[in-house]
Structure formats: C-alpha cells, structure tokens
Length: 175
Image 1: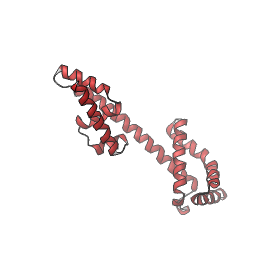
Image 2: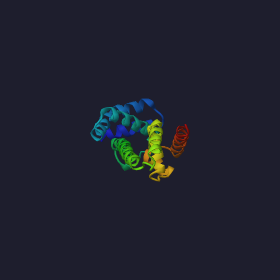
Image 3: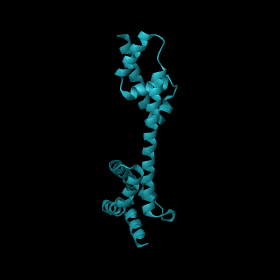
Image 4: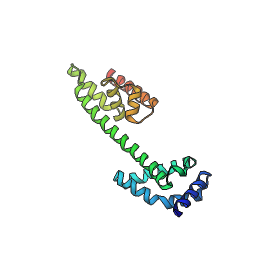
C-alpha cells in the first residue's frame, strides 16, 4: 500500500509537469511494464518502442488517472497493453492486405497478352504501397476510407498515394 501511495504522489506531480517525478515514476514502474510487453510482443526492441509510446501517453494523460479506478501500475500497464494490441492489430491488417493484393494481382490479368504484360511491367515500377492501394481500390472495390483503415493511414494519404500511382501508370502505359 505504501508503494501505491508513493506512485500516486509521483503521478500527481507528473500531472503538474514535474519531470523529476516522472523519471522516478518511470524508474519504479518500467521493469514491470517492459516484462508485460516482452511477453506480449516477443520482441525486445519492439517492446521498448511500445513502452516509450506508452510513457509518452502517461506523461500526456497523467491528469486522467483516478485512484478509485485502480492502481497506478495497473493503469500504466493497461496503457502499454493497449498500445501493444494496436500494434499487433495493425501488423495483422497489413499482412492480410498484402496477401489479398497478391491474390488480386494473380486474378486480374486482362484478356490481351500484350496489354497484360505491359500493365504488369508498369505496375512493377510503382512503389509497393501504391501498387497494393491501386489494386485494392480498382480491382477489389475498396473505398478510400476502407483502405485508410486497412493500412492504418490517413484518408488523404491514401488518396494521394493512389492519385500519384495512377499518374505514374498512365505515363508508363503511354510510352
């Protein structure tokens, strides 16, 4: 119980912008947080990255902690776990998108052999993300918003990527 009171005091001071208190909070809690993340992610470097993100969030949201809802350490571990889960979900989405893009590329061959070869050659000149986005949008019919969710990217970025890719394709096909 004494440790909980000390962690609550450090977190309260952190909420006021006290960097020394934040450092002490980090030193007191990071070994446990790191152990949880390594167990989840099975990658020490990735666990360190996620832990850094989590503590940035702890710094930014220290005022959001309420003692009646649970222990300080539990609150920090929950933040870190959610960050790790977000990362794992994003990686899974990318894997699914990559496998679907490969399947679509195999199924989308046009009837004309010459055009098919030229199109495949031009698609090969595009950046991987541009090629996947174009195929997902025009062959699979995904909207920009759906692609943004699947690629964990802003909608504007997805639209720009597709637009630039289509411009490069047009130039390549006209040559």
